[in-house]
Figure 1: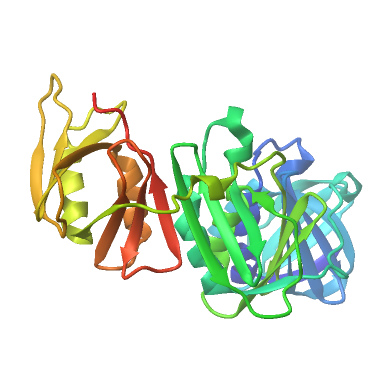
Figure 2: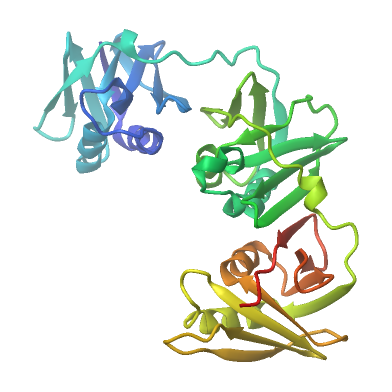
Length: 367
């Protein structure tokens, strides 16, 4: 096999492949990228078994063929080279990489391509077309609430559901829940609810453009994602996702509003003296005032008052301040609303004015 490629084009794709690959063991086929050179196109594939990556780039082929090459070292070589054309030559198990503009060559050992895992054929798959920016917004509003407790594996991903014309994404770790629903265009293919691992969702956030559409499909136990010249697939998480609709309060009696910047700044300052195991902070509400304080400890304590829109009985609630801080980072309005019923029942965090998402937080014990 022999072909010539553009260094910068190849480097962009190999950097994505390296993100997918989970091992750097040179003796493992899973540390390699698969190259298939034919019809002046190079198909590049990488996998960690659970997540697959496939893309195509234009090249000038002298001799067609296919092989696999150790991704980590290939990445290092490409990074060291100047921009321009590079030759790739395979002779049995020996691969030579030579930049046209420099008198240097690198030689790597290849592994047989027949050992590389098979990828699903996506040619006849029916896809859902979703605006990319809408999907990225939905992922951003939910992914931080995914549980990292591997004993509760069914919470280790974002739940994709469809109701009527709406796509719904939900994530929870059992102590908080994030929810967003967006109306889709007509003609959407039906799919069964699915739990999608964070790795492929983070790839979408990082690699997908902000304009255009993204194609999604749920086939057997896999999600398939297509945008641009990329195809990503991921094994879905098996198990029964919690009944999120039961967690969403039907009615909450009280509300208070605060300026997002005021609350964020106060949480950062009070958080300096928060007990690091529980992350507990107290929210004390009185007419027009929210007092945020840390739990008394051997180190000390902190307290800050900020104005809020509230009228009602004085009440104090305790929260893991991370569970307040993280939703705030993805709420893009100047004001935030908190709906609640009592100090020990679920609190709903919303944008003000209200949008198509919300975050539910369970208060902590008042210790």
